[in-house]
Image 1 (tube, rainbow, N blue to C red):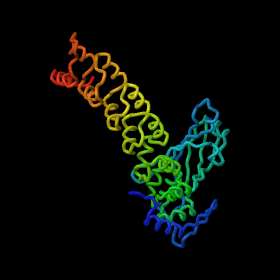
Image 2: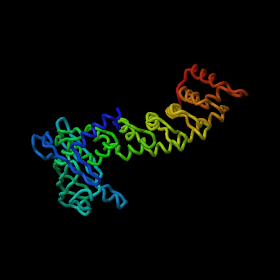
Image 3: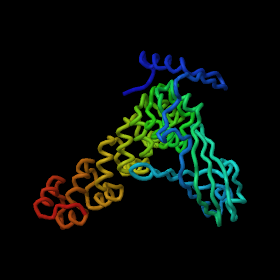
Image 4: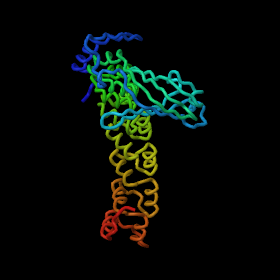
Length: 343
């Protein structure tokens, strides 16, 4: 369901603004008097876990200052894990010299949702140790007007690990995404469905998009760039489900141009997907032309591929006949010979 501006949306905005004052360049938070959170850890403000890290081997000097950090926490029913790629400069108290050498380390990762404190050791560009997480009370107060009145420490930790920042929440709110669940916020952040992406897709006519549509678009690589490339290749005004189908089945702008070059310029999205699934290519079209079939309809090309009507089969059927048999006759013969499978 759309979360864009409506009477319901205006009411939601009023409720949020009643508890949250936002000024240009400055954010002042009105903290309610009620308890800010209920801690799943029984009152302790610290959550513990383990970490490992490695510095990717690369000739790129910039990449040499990146850290692949993995955080693990044991929880009821198993273990949760988060993989982060960060710059060394993002980790307060850690230097490039420390990660490249052999030394005991202590550093912090500061996120809006709280701070993660690390202790351990680096040696030969690999590190490991323990961490503790402390949630930010200000951040928990910030979430309250958005409908999250009882965020526990475990939830706050996941928000920190996935970097669901105040700016991320506010930007989506301003675009009409009201009362997103914590799970939705985390999923959108992980998929990279931020306000920039939402605005870019909206500018191309894809708005409003639901949370599920945003997640699907990002997961399958439907981007403004992909939409633009398809438009340049002649596929314009596609619905989002058609774009998703293109990405899932490999209908690329290059494939669209390939089929145009083969003489198929005005194919529907459905036909392009069917041709791609069943292996109709520009080369297949050229091979058919070489054996006398120059204007095979798109649906018949697909039928040829499904039933195994190959150029070799056609040559065997036609032999030295001056008049090639019809497309329907080829298909009938192929089905009747008991070998009707695609090559």
